[in-house]
Length: 315
Image (cartoon, rainbow, N blue to C red; front, side):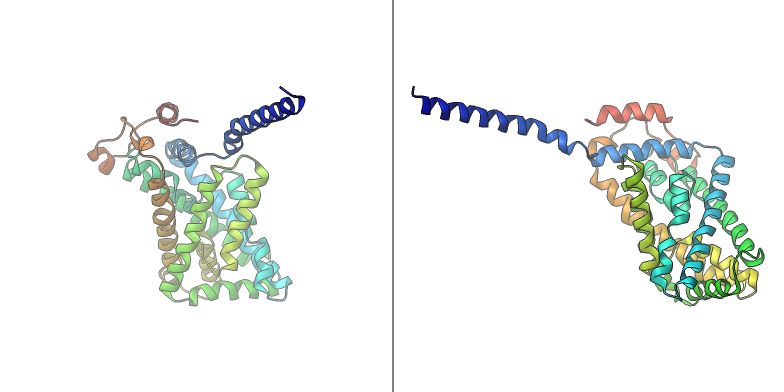
Protein backbone atom coordinates (compact mmCIF):
# COMPACT_ATOMS: atom_id res chain seq x y z
CA UNK A 1 0.00 0.00 0.00
CA UNK A 2 1.42 3.40 -0.95
CA UNK A 3 1.91 6.24 1.49
CA UNK A 4 -0.79 8.21 -0.34
CA UNK A 5 -3.24 5.31 0.03
CA UNK A 6 -2.30 4.90 3.64
CA UNK A 7 -2.84 8.61 4.20
CA UNK A 8 -6.26 8.49 2.56
CA UNK A 9 -7.16 5.38 4.51
CA UNK A 10 -6.05 6.95 7.78
CA UNK A 11 -7.95 10.14 6.96
CA UNK A 12 -11.09 8.16 6.21
CA UNK A 13 -10.76 6.26 9.46
CA UNK A 14 -10.29 9.50 11.41
CA UNK A 15 -13.30 11.07 9.67
CA UNK A 16 -15.40 7.99 10.40
CA UNK A 17 -14.26 8.06 14.01
CA UNK A 18 -15.12 11.77 14.32
CA UNK A 19 -18.49 11.13 12.69
CA UNK A 20 -19.21 8.31 15.12
CA UNK A 21 -18.18 10.49 18.08
CA UNK A 22 -20.44 13.25 16.80
CA UNK A 23 -23.37 10.85 16.58
CA UNK A 24 -22.65 9.65 20.08
CA UNK A 25 -22.48 13.18 21.48
CA UNK A 26 -25.58 14.52 19.70
CA UNK A 27 -28.16 12.94 22.02
CA UNK A 28 -26.38 14.47 25.04
CA UNK A 29 -26.74 17.89 23.45
CA UNK A 30 -30.50 17.52 23.10
CA UNK A 31 -30.89 16.02 26.57
CA UNK A 32 -30.22 19.51 27.93
CA UNK A 33 -33.94 19.94 27.28
CA UNK A 34 -36.57 18.09 29.26
CA UNK A 35 -39.02 15.95 27.33
CA UNK A 36 -42.75 16.63 27.48
CA UNK A 37 -43.21 13.62 29.73
CA UNK A 38 -40.51 14.85 32.13
CA UNK A 39 -42.16 18.28 32.37
CA UNK A 40 -45.52 16.62 32.96
CA UNK A 41 -43.96 14.47 35.68
CA UNK A 42 -42.74 17.60 37.47
CA UNK A 43 -46.16 19.18 37.13
CA UNK A 44 -47.87 16.18 38.75
CA UNK A 45 -45.43 15.87 41.64
CA UNK A 46 -45.55 19.61 42.41
CA UNK A 47 -49.35 19.57 42.22
CA UNK A 48 -49.56 16.58 44.54
CA UNK A 49 -47.46 18.42 47.12
CA UNK A 50 -49.46 21.65 46.87
CA UNK A 51 -52.92 20.10 46.92
CA UNK A 52 -51.96 18.26 50.10
CA UNK A 53 -51.08 21.47 51.98
CA UNK A 54 -53.39 22.59 54.74
CA UNK A 55 -55.98 25.32 54.14
CA UNK A 56 -54.10 27.82 56.32
CA UNK A 57 -50.89 27.50 54.30
CA UNK A 58 -52.66 27.81 50.96
CA UNK A 59 -54.79 30.74 52.11
CA UNK A 60 -51.97 32.88 53.48
CA UNK A 61 -49.75 32.09 50.53
CA UNK A 62 -52.65 33.33 48.42
CA UNK A 63 -52.95 36.47 50.56
CA UNK A 64 -49.26 37.23 49.99
CA UNK A 65 -49.70 36.76 46.24
CA UNK A 66 -52.80 38.96 46.17
CA UNK A 67 -51.03 41.73 48.04
CA UNK A 68 -48.05 41.43 45.68
CA UNK A 69 -50.40 42.21 42.80
CA UNK A 70 -50.83 45.62 44.46
CA UNK A 71 -47.21 46.27 43.49
CA UNK A 72 -48.11 45.63 39.85
CA UNK A 73 -51.13 47.95 40.06
CA UNK A 74 -49.15 50.69 41.79
CA UNK A 75 -46.10 50.58 39.52
CA UNK A 76 -48.16 50.28 36.35
CA UNK A 77 -50.08 53.46 37.24
CA UNK A 78 -46.97 55.29 38.48
CA UNK A 79 -44.90 54.44 35.42
CA UNK A 80 -47.75 55.31 33.05
CA UNK A 81 -48.15 58.69 34.74
CA UNK A 82 -44.40 59.37 34.69
CA UNK A 83 -44.27 58.49 30.98
CA UNK A 84 -46.94 61.04 30.10
CA UNK A 85 -49.81 58.52 29.99
CA UNK A 86 -48.04 56.31 27.44
CA UNK A 87 -49.29 52.77 28.28
CA UNK A 88 -46.45 50.94 26.51
CA UNK A 89 -43.86 52.58 28.75
CA UNK A 90 -46.02 52.12 31.83
CA UNK A 91 -46.28 48.40 31.07
CA UNK A 92 -42.54 47.88 31.64
CA UNK A 93 -43.04 47.52 35.40
CA UNK A 94 -46.30 45.55 35.19
CA UNK A 95 -44.59 42.11 35.63
CA UNK A 96 -42.89 43.04 38.94
CA UNK A 97 -45.65 41.70 41.18
CA UNK A 98 -45.83 38.46 39.20
CA UNK A 99 -42.06 38.01 39.44
CA UNK A 100 -42.34 38.37 43.20
CA UNK A 101 -45.09 35.73 43.28
CA UNK A 102 -43.58 33.12 41.00
CA UNK A 103 -39.97 33.38 42.15
CA UNK A 104 -41.21 33.41 45.75
CA UNK A 105 -43.44 30.33 45.20
CA UNK A 106 -46.63 32.03 46.38
CA UNK A 107 -50.05 30.76 45.36
CA UNK A 108 -51.80 32.58 42.52
CA UNK A 109 -55.18 31.35 41.29
CA UNK A 110 -54.32 31.47 37.61
CA UNK A 111 -51.20 29.37 38.16
CA UNK A 112 -53.41 26.65 39.56
CA UNK A 113 -55.33 26.16 36.32
CA UNK A 114 -52.53 23.76 35.32
CA UNK A 115 -51.01 21.52 38.06
CA UNK A 116 -54.11 20.42 40.07
CA UNK A 117 -56.14 19.98 36.88
CA UNK A 118 -53.47 17.60 35.55
CA UNK A 119 -53.82 15.56 38.75
CA UNK A 120 -57.59 15.39 38.30
CA UNK A 121 -57.33 14.37 34.64
CA UNK A 122 -55.18 11.41 35.71
CA UNK A 123 -57.59 10.64 38.59
CA UNK A 124 -54.81 11.20 41.11
CA UNK A 125 -56.89 13.85 42.87
CA UNK A 126 -60.63 14.39 43.14
CA UNK A 127 -62.70 17.23 41.74
CA UNK A 128 -63.71 18.40 45.24
CA UNK A 129 -60.03 18.54 46.27
CA UNK A 130 -59.20 20.68 43.21
CA UNK A 131 -62.18 23.00 43.68
CA UNK A 132 -61.30 23.35 47.37
CA UNK A 133 -57.75 24.36 46.49
CA UNK A 134 -59.01 26.82 43.89
CA UNK A 135 -61.47 28.40 46.32
CA UNK A 136 -58.87 28.72 49.08
CA UNK A 137 -56.21 30.27 46.86
CA UNK A 138 -58.65 32.61 45.10
CA UNK A 139 -60.07 33.75 48.44
CA UNK A 140 -56.55 34.49 49.66
CA UNK A 141 -55.71 36.38 46.45
CA UNK A 142 -58.86 38.49 46.76
CA UNK A 143 -58.23 39.28 50.43
CA UNK A 144 -54.64 40.31 49.70
CA UNK A 145 -55.73 42.41 46.73
CA UNK A 146 -58.49 44.06 48.75
CA UNK A 147 -56.08 45.05 51.51
CA UNK A 148 -53.73 46.45 48.87
CA UNK A 149 -56.56 48.37 47.18
CA UNK A 150 -57.56 49.86 50.53
CA UNK A 151 -54.02 51.11 51.10
CA UNK A 152 -53.85 52.55 47.60
CA UNK A 153 -57.16 54.34 48.07
CA UNK A 154 -56.61 55.75 51.58
CA UNK A 155 -52.96 55.25 52.49
CA UNK A 156 -51.55 58.30 50.73
CA UNK A 157 -49.25 56.03 48.75
CA UNK A 158 -49.84 57.78 45.42
CA UNK A 159 -49.73 61.39 44.33
CA UNK A 160 -52.98 62.95 43.08
CA UNK A 161 -51.73 62.60 39.51
CA UNK A 162 -51.03 58.87 39.88
CA UNK A 163 -54.39 58.42 41.60
CA UNK A 164 -56.10 59.95 38.56
CA UNK A 165 -54.11 57.67 36.24
CA UNK A 166 -54.98 54.53 38.20
CA UNK A 167 -58.65 55.51 38.33
CA UNK A 168 -58.58 55.90 34.54
CA UNK A 169 -56.90 52.51 34.02
CA UNK A 170 -59.39 50.74 36.28
CA UNK A 171 -62.38 52.52 34.75
CA UNK A 172 -61.29 51.43 31.28
CA UNK A 173 -61.60 47.80 32.37
CA UNK A 174 -65.03 48.31 33.94
CA UNK A 175 -66.30 50.02 30.78
CA UNK A 176 -65.10 47.21 28.48
CA UNK A 177 -67.88 45.00 27.11
CA UNK A 178 -68.51 41.73 29.02
CA UNK A 179 -67.58 39.33 26.22
CA UNK A 180 -64.59 41.44 25.20
CA UNK A 181 -63.32 41.10 28.76
CA UNK A 182 -63.98 37.38 28.68
CA UNK A 183 -62.04 36.66 25.50
CA UNK A 184 -59.19 38.99 26.44
CA UNK A 185 -58.99 37.10 29.73
CA UNK A 186 -58.90 33.77 27.89
CA UNK A 187 -55.65 34.81 26.24
CA UNK A 188 -54.26 36.06 29.56
CA UNK A 189 -55.14 32.69 31.15
CA UNK A 190 -53.34 30.94 28.32
CA UNK A 191 -50.23 33.05 28.95
CA UNK A 192 -50.18 32.38 32.70
CA UNK A 193 -50.75 28.62 32.44
CA UNK A 194 -48.22 28.50 29.60
CA UNK A 195 -45.65 30.19 31.83
CA UNK A 196 -46.28 27.57 34.52
CA UNK A 197 -45.77 24.74 32.02
CA UNK A 198 -42.56 26.18 30.55
CA UNK A 199 -41.30 27.10 34.04
CA UNK A 200 -41.22 23.41 34.96
CA UNK A 201 -38.74 22.89 32.15
CA UNK A 202 -36.47 25.79 33.14
CA UNK A 203 -33.20 24.96 34.87
CA UNK A 204 -31.88 28.31 36.17
CA UNK A 205 -33.14 31.48 37.84
CA UNK A 206 -32.03 33.88 35.10
CA UNK A 207 -34.07 32.08 32.46
CA UNK A 208 -37.01 31.89 34.84
CA UNK A 209 -36.82 35.64 35.50
CA UNK A 210 -36.77 36.46 31.77
CA UNK A 211 -39.58 34.00 31.05
CA UNK A 212 -41.89 35.48 33.68
CA UNK A 213 -41.02 39.08 32.82
CA UNK A 214 -41.58 38.78 29.06
CA UNK A 215 -44.72 36.64 29.37
CA UNK A 216 -46.47 38.92 31.85
CA UNK A 217 -45.38 42.00 29.94
CA UNK A 218 -47.57 40.66 27.13
CA UNK A 219 -50.72 41.12 29.26
CA UNK A 220 -50.76 44.94 29.36
CA UNK A 221 -49.17 45.25 25.91
CA UNK A 222 -51.95 43.07 24.48
CA UNK A 223 -54.68 44.89 26.39
CA UNK A 224 -55.50 41.66 28.25
CA UNK A 225 -56.86 41.17 31.78
CA UNK A 226 -55.81 39.14 34.83
CA UNK A 227 -58.42 38.34 37.46
CA UNK A 228 -56.45 39.34 40.56
CA UNK A 229 -55.34 42.61 38.98
CA UNK A 230 -58.93 43.25 37.84
CA UNK A 231 -60.31 42.46 41.30
CA UNK A 232 -57.81 44.81 42.95
CA UNK A 233 -58.83 47.56 40.54
CA UNK A 234 -62.51 46.88 41.25
CA UNK A 235 -61.99 47.19 44.99
CA UNK A 236 -59.96 50.37 44.48
CA UNK A 237 -62.85 51.95 42.57
CA UNK A 238 -65.33 50.70 45.19
CA UNK A 239 -63.32 52.28 48.01
CA UNK A 240 -63.24 55.56 46.09
CA UNK A 241 -67.01 55.38 45.59
CA UNK A 242 -66.68 55.28 41.80
CA UNK A 243 -68.69 52.06 41.33
CA UNK A 244 -70.80 49.65 43.37
CA UNK A 245 -69.32 46.33 44.51
CA UNK A 246 -71.88 44.12 42.77
CA UNK A 247 -71.52 46.07 39.52
CA UNK A 248 -67.73 45.75 39.61
CA UNK A 249 -67.86 42.03 40.29
CA UNK A 250 -70.41 41.11 37.63
CA UNK A 251 -69.20 43.47 34.93
CA UNK A 252 -65.42 43.24 35.38
CA UNK A 253 -64.06 40.63 37.80
CA UNK A 254 -66.42 37.77 36.87
CA UNK A 255 -65.86 37.69 33.08
CA UNK A 256 -62.11 37.96 33.67
CA UNK A 257 -62.20 35.08 36.19
CA UNK A 258 -64.12 32.84 33.79
CA UNK A 259 -61.88 33.74 30.85
CA UNK A 260 -58.64 33.16 32.77
CA UNK A 261 -59.93 29.78 33.95
CA UNK A 262 -61.00 28.65 30.49
CA UNK A 263 -57.74 29.79 28.91
CA UNK A 264 -55.64 27.96 31.45
CA UNK A 265 -57.62 24.74 31.74
CA UNK A 266 -58.69 24.13 28.15
CA UNK A 267 -56.06 25.78 26.00
CA UNK A 268 -52.99 24.79 28.01
CA UNK A 269 -53.62 22.03 30.54
CA UNK A 270 -55.84 19.77 28.44
CA UNK A 271 -53.73 20.16 25.29
CA UNK A 272 -50.50 19.44 27.18
CA UNK A 273 -52.18 16.44 28.79
CA UNK A 274 -52.92 14.90 25.41
CA UNK A 275 -49.47 15.61 23.96
CA UNK A 276 -47.76 13.46 26.59
CA UNK A 277 -47.18 9.75 26.02
CA UNK A 278 -49.92 7.26 26.81
CA UNK A 279 -47.69 5.35 29.25
CA UNK A 280 -47.35 8.22 31.74
CA UNK A 281 -51.12 8.21 32.28
CA UNK A 282 -51.30 4.45 32.93
CA UNK A 283 -50.95 4.52 36.71
CA UNK A 284 -52.62 1.75 38.67
CA UNK A 285 -53.04 3.68 41.95
CA UNK A 286 -55.85 5.97 40.85
CA UNK A 287 -59.09 7.00 42.53
CA UNK A 288 -62.29 5.15 41.86
CA UNK A 289 -64.97 7.08 39.98
CA UNK A 290 -66.96 7.75 43.15
CA UNK A 291 -63.83 8.92 45.00
CA UNK A 292 -62.85 11.05 42.02
CA UNK A 293 -66.22 12.81 41.91
CA UNK A 294 -67.41 13.01 45.50
CA UNK A 295 -64.53 12.82 47.99
CA UNK A 296 -61.69 15.12 48.99
CA UNK A 297 -58.96 12.57 48.31
CA UNK A 298 -55.67 12.26 46.49
CA UNK A 299 -54.43 8.88 45.30
CA UNK A 300 -50.74 8.96 46.27
CA UNK A 301 -48.35 10.98 48.40
CA UNK A 302 -45.67 12.85 46.39
CA UNK A 303 -42.89 10.31 47.04
CA UNK A 304 -44.93 7.32 45.91
CA UNK A 305 -46.21 9.26 42.92
CA UNK A 306 -42.63 10.09 41.94
CA UNK A 307 -41.67 6.41 42.16
CA UNK A 308 -44.58 5.38 39.93
CA UNK A 309 -43.79 8.07 37.36
CA UNK A 310 -40.07 7.25 37.31
CA UNK A 311 -41.03 3.70 36.29
CA UNK A 312 -42.91 5.10 33.30
CA UNK A 313 -40.38 7.62 32.03
CA UNK A 314 -37.00 6.97 30.43
CA UNK A 315 -34.77 9.90 31.48
